[in-house]
Length: 275
Ligand SMILES: NC(=O)c1ccc[n+]([C@@H]2O[C@H](COP(=O)([O-])OP(=O)(O)OC[C@H]3O[C@@H](n4cnc5c(N)ncnc54)[C@H](OP(=O)(O)O)[C@@H]3O)[C@@H](O)[C@H]2O)c1
Image (cartoon, rainbow, N blue to C red):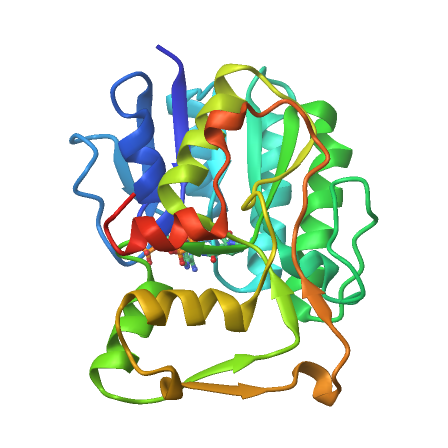
C-alpha cells in the first residue's frame, strides 16, 4: 500500500480525501486545531506551519510515497515550510501535490484561465500561491504537481453553511451580477485527485466544474430549488462597472475521464441532496 501524508488533513478537502482514499492507501495526516478522528492512532499529528523540524521528523519516520498539501496559515511561514518540505523530499522518490487557487489569476478578470496561461495576481494570497508553485517546481521538477481549484462546496463546507444560515436568519445574500465563475464539490475533487494519483499524472491541473456560470444564476438556481424568495439575493457590480468579469478556471487537459466531470447544476443538486 502506498503511504500518503496529508498536510492539513483536518480541513474541508482533507476530510473528503481521507474518505476517498482510506480503504486503499496507508494514510497519515496533520491538523492544527481540529484533532483528526478519522485516522487510526499513531497516524495523526498536530503540526503548525512554523514547526519545520517536526515536519522533517515526520517525513523521515513515515517516508511517504505521496505528500499532499492542503495547508493554510501565514503566507511567509507557509512559503518557508513548503521550501523546507521540498528540500526534504528532493532526494527521495516522493511526489508532492500542492493545492493552489483561482486567485493566481486575480490580476486578469478578462477571461477564464487554463493550465497554459501564465499566472498574474493582484492579491497577497494569489501572489503567495504563485511564489510557492514556482519554488516547488524549481526544487522538485516534475515530482511537484500543482492543483488549482475554484470555490469548493460540500455538505459541511463553510460556504454552504453560510448560505443556509443566511436563509434561516432571513438575511440577504450579496452577489455580483457581472461575475462568471466556476465551482467544485469536495467529494468530486477527492475522486479527481485519486485518479491523478493512481495514474501518476503530472504537471499543473485545473480541477473545476465542466461549465462556467454567472454567480447570480448559480444562486438563483439554488434559492429557487430551496423554494426561497428571490428577494433574498442582493446584486452589485464587480469592479463597479458592467463588463463581464471572469474569476474562473478552465481545463484544457484531456486526461480526466468524463465520469469524473460535474456541472454547476450537478453541484447544486448534490448540495440539495438529489444527485
Ligand atoms: N476551500 C476552497 O474553496 C479553496 C479554494 C481554493 C483553494 N483552496 C486551497 O485548498 C487547500 C485546502 O483548502 P480547505 O478549504 O480544505 O482548507 P481548510 O478547510 O481551511 O483546511 C486547512 C487545513 O490547514 C490546517 N491549518 C490551518 N492553519 C494552519 C497552521 N497555521 N499551521 C498548520 N496547519 C494549519 C487546518 O488545520 P485545523 O483545521 O486543524 O485548524 C486544516 O487542516 C488550501 O491550501 C487552500 O488555499 C481552497
